[in-house]
Length: 253
Image (cartoon, rainbow, N blue to C red; front, side):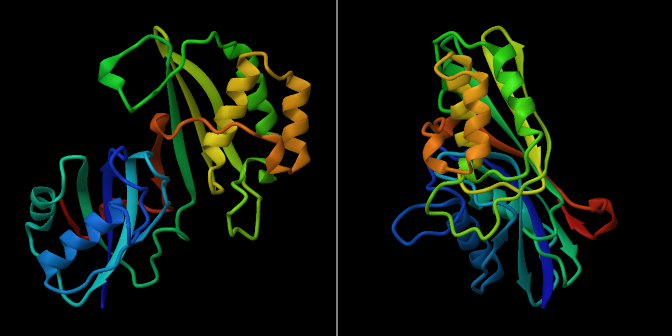
C-alpha cells in the first residue's frame, strides 16, 4: 500500500465537524466518499485535527492509503466532485510511517470577532457589539503562555489522558476597524480548548472577571471554572506544520 497526504481547506458551517458520523454530514464523510468513487474502492482518511461542528479550516491535512499511483488529474477530479465549501489543494506521496495527526509539530488557530455588522463575514466571525478591553485580554493571553496544563479549558467528555500543551504564542490584534483576531499556536490542542479560552478571555475583556480571577481559572485545572465557550463560527484552523518541506515529495496539484 502507498500512503498519501492530502492538504485541503473548508468552510465548516454546514458540517458536524471533521469526524465521520452516521447521522450527520461531516467533512470527512465528503472526502472519503469522493476518494472512494474516484479510486473505485473504499478509502478511509485520518486527519491532523478533528475540528468541531461549524469550525472552519484554512489548512487541514489527512492521510490515506491506496494500492497504486494516483491518477494525474485526481485533485481536479476531487474538486469537481466535492461541494463548493470544501477544496483540495494538493496530495503528496509520503513515507509509510507518516501519520497526519502524530507527525504534526504544531497547529495554529485564529478566532475572529467583529463589532460592526458585516454580511461578508456572516458565519465566519462572532458578531459581538459589547465593548472589549483588548489590552486586558492580551494580559490574560500572556498568563496562558506561562502554563502547560490546560485542563480548565478542555471539554469534560474528552477522552484525553494528558492536559499538557506547549503554546508557541497567544495574542489579540485588531486587524481592521471593529475586527479583532485571536492568534494561538501550540504543539497540540485539547477538545474545545480554543473556544473555551476565547470565551473566558471575552469575559475578561468585558470586565466580568478580573485578571486575578482569570489566572485562578487557569491554575484551577477545573473545567467548571471556565463556563463560557465562544461560538464555533469565529474559529479557523489556519496551519498544521510538519518537520519537512512538502516540495521534496511527489505531488498532485
